[in-house]
Image (cartoon, rainbow, N blue to C red; front, side):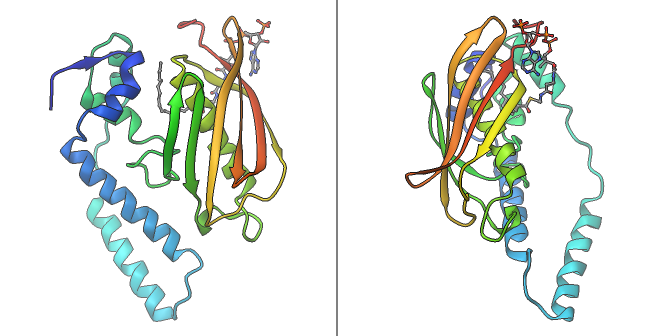
Length: 221
Ligand SMILES: CCCCCCCC/C=C\CCCCCCCC(=O)SCCNC(=O)CCNC(=O)[C@H](O)C(C)(C)COP(=O)(O)OP(=O)(O)OC[C@H]1O[C@@H](n2cnc3c(N)ncnc32)[C@H](O)[C@@H]1OP(=O)(O)O
């Protein structure tokens, strides 16, 4: 691992260009296996012995894992803002993102197709575990996804902020188990208030629109 260090505006570039640390190769494998299990086991048909066998195996793994120590990411965050975050710190911040983070087992995986000052676009497919009404993505999952997508548009344009208000209009069904696209862009700024809009598309059909206000914290604004 190199001893280069990074500040907040180099975060995304470092994350995309630095080699994946060896432990993250394994963390991503764990997360991918957990995601595959979640998708395959939800609503899975099986006789009682089969279900009981799987439950035994999973409980045995939980017992083996125990309660390991976990890293406090606030230290890495502080280092980022003083320009002294290492590539390892950056992976510890980014790889666990609850939307798209490859080391987070509950994160829907997103292929980011665009990420720049003009906006972001991601492609993803949500499995049966994210279903609300039959065949459709749960509305709360959509809000979760859009909060992340609109935040990402902010970060891609080198701005920092937390969600203040997020308004969502559900226009049409968003299907599970098919490719959908999320897009977002900044539309304006007034002092610490940043205005962002975005949505979800299935093919050419926009299924959701969203707009919101992000606030740069007083300490950074
Ligand atoms: C350069 C690249 C760097 C990259 C960075 C790292 C990347 C990491 C990558 C991957 C990690 C993934 C991270 C994803 C994150 C997803 C997003 C979230 O989940 S954020 C969590 C949920 N949101 C909260 O927890 C906020 C809770 N609320 C607050 O903290 C405060 O209420 C806050 C900061 C929003 C506002 O507090 P005040 O004290 O700053 O606001 P006042 O001074 O009273 O007002 C300023 C102006 O803003 C308006 N305002 C205040 N609150 C508002 C609100 N909630 N909505 C809209 N406007 C509001 C006011 O009306 C006022 O406007 P007037 O100046 O008068 O025009």
